[in-house]
Each structure stands twice: as structure tokens, then as C-alpha cells.
Length: 163
Ligand code: GDP
Ligand code: MG
Image 1 (cartoon, rainbow, N blue to C red):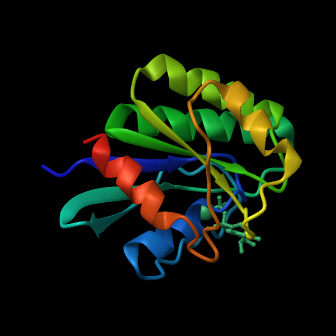
Image 2 (cartoon, helix red, strand yellow; image 1 turned 45 degrees about the vertical axis):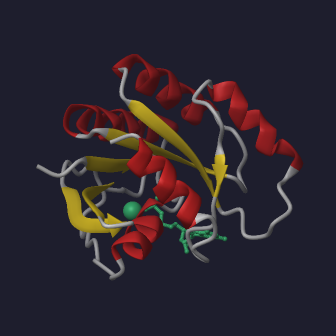
């Protein structure tokens, strides 16, 4: 069966934007009720003739940091169980957050391949605090702009190398 790649990260970092651009169509994710969802959105993707399944882990409208953290844990747990490669997305405009650190340490314990994507890097100049993301210990952070599909070729190359 096809390799499975999951996108995880806290709400609003751009996971769904990335997912929709990679799969090449807009798959709306409707959440009428704020709250934790265990639903995962799957779609088929292809790069250089290699087919894989991409999972967008669901988002919520959290109102406290605790809810953010519990949602991230659930997302990460689902991703750990089902995926071959985990794409951990963080927000390059926000910079490194304590939530990012917490999820990173959890992801490292899975022993799965994790690719660190720093989203919202919309221009070629990296922000000064970009290098903070190395502290997560997940290897080289890859700057991307999901909105503008910047660096997608590099990301997809890194993903398929891990299959
Ligand atoms: P999710 O909650 O992680 O699924 O995030 P979304 O994909 O829903 O995006 C959250 C917000 O970030 C939306 O307003 C997007 O338009 C915005 N966004 C996503 N990707 C980018 C990007 O590459 N650059 C910028 N500037 N904004 C982005
Ligand atoms: Mg989303």
C-alpha cells in the first residue's frame, strides 16, 4: 500500500493550505462546532511518479493554551500511529513557541521520520529567528510558503527520499 504522510502542528500554522496545494484541489474542512476532531482528511498525492497518501490533521478554534496542547497531542498521536512520514509544521512568522517544543519532543520519541516545515516564509530572506527552529532537534528546518507554494519541490523530494 501507499506510504502515508501526515501534517501536524498547532492550529493556524497553514497545514490545510499546504495540504490543499499539494493534492491540487481544495478540500473543505467544515467544523460547525469548535472542539477536538479526530477526523483526518486523506487525499492522494504524487511526486516524480511516486504516489502517497497525505493526511491533514484537523484543526479547532482553541480558546486556551491547554486546549491547543491537547489538540496537538491528539493530532500527533494519530499521526504517529498511522503515518510513515510526519510533516511537523510551524509558523515562521510567530517564531519558535513552547507548544512547538512540546510536540517536537513527542514526535522525536516516535522514532518515525519527521520533516520540519517552517511555513509563512513568503520571501527569500529568512527571518533572523528562523535559526531558532534548529533547537527542536529535528534536523534542518525547511522554509516554505504554503500560500505561494515556495520550496514545495524541495519538501516533496525530502519526503519521497524517506519512503
Ligand atoms: P491550519 O489551521 O494549520 O490548517 O492553517 P490554515 O491552512 O487554515 O491557515 C491558517 C492561516 O494562515 C490562513 O489565514 C492562511 O491563509 C494563512 N497561511 C497559510 N499559509 C500561509 C503562508 O505560506 N503565508 C502566509 N502569509 N499565510 C499563510
Ligand atoms: Mg486546518
